[in-house]
Length: 220
Image 1 (tube, rainbow, N blue to C red):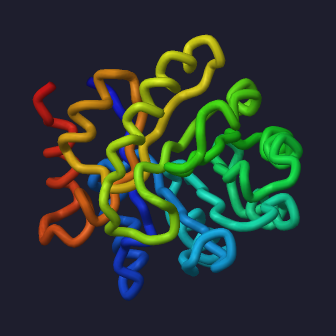
Image 2: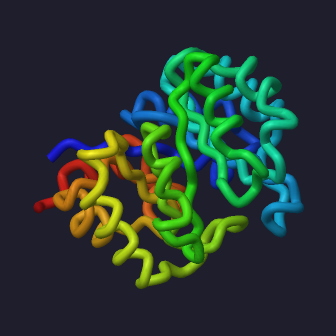
């Protein structure tokens, strides 16, 4: 079964970031997930614009930018200038007065537009944006920190989105507490990709290539 795996780089070893990028790339990761946090929209600071620029310069793999910041439209050009055409940029609709304007800026720059949906955000409140975006990042934990517990009610939200994705032409991605059992359950249902952090990829004492190979070898 084909599904995409993206590395949550806020969980990487920053003392050896060049090596981390190289080992993940050689290990077969599909893309690099960059969490940008401003300490306002979420109660944490994570990766920076400079982190994004460095990782983008160190790999040819696609970049997957998750903007957990207030009013991303105020600074969207800074992020878009640091990316290549075809990279993905997710925004949180609640963080913007007019999210469709920000999404159009992403489209105009040749990037893939996406929205991230928090556990407490209903599908109904983002319905019209589903006609604009190409990717929907479903948060299975509250945004802001790694290593959180999965919130089971998110599964029902994914079921709703799966019923809409063909008609509205978007793909669904999973972010947060991504374990093997979640991939086994949701990949066959149509979830396209999974963001891997401390639950399944980082800090396991194994080469990334072995970890990723084991994930792709899961028995469905």
